[in-house]
Length: 294
Image (cartoon, rainbow, N blue to C red; front, side, top):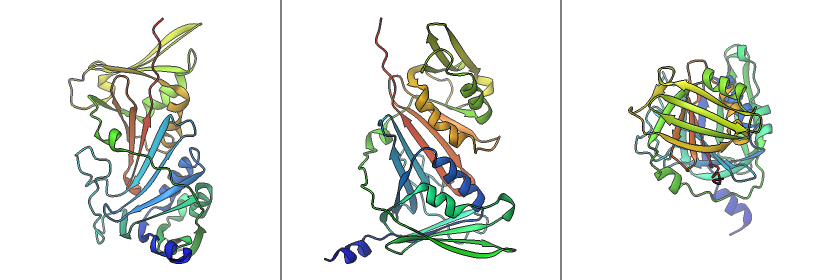
């Protein structure tokens, strides 16, 4: 089999359509602060697009899904999406994947191709099918049609196994608002790079201990959307530098959106955020810090 034939055989085919190009552009812009090159994993079985990568130090795994969030199965399997209805006029996005495949691109280039003004009210289609480039078409009722393409790059796809994380049962889960999380990031980092995170039936604590003193940032339960109460108390420690990887995505959330924290003592922290306007969910798995007893 020739190289050309092999490339064409592995080429993904499908289309993602978004009524709000600006929301997609802002999401990709925020994601570009976390990674330079991204894999585009097109999955026809689950009718979804997946972007998955780790930070260079392999402390934080980040996964992005574009799929039908409203019909996501509640099995705990992060891959379990149902088909998006193609002719649903109320939907603000649609996904129709015909053939699975893997491609890669430079995220800054993708961001620049998607660039749009908020008031333009443009829709956008992202089309897989060409073996060598991604096709992008932006439309506006008052500004016409813009067609662009973006060449793929060669990227060694890291085989990141998700089975252990997907099957992990987290005993404690809360939802925290953008406002409260912004407050935490503003107050944190005075005493230590290490943040103690504890969730119990009273609320959530972010603690620090350092040479100059200590702090306890506490948000009580009435400020939170507490799931499956009463909550079992869980506590672990995490690096603030890697918790900060959440900040670019939090910054583009709307005021009423929430961030879900799932915690298990001495296990990775799971943080997930949904963006219904573009059918996306981003999930962080952040490795914990094991502190030595003095």
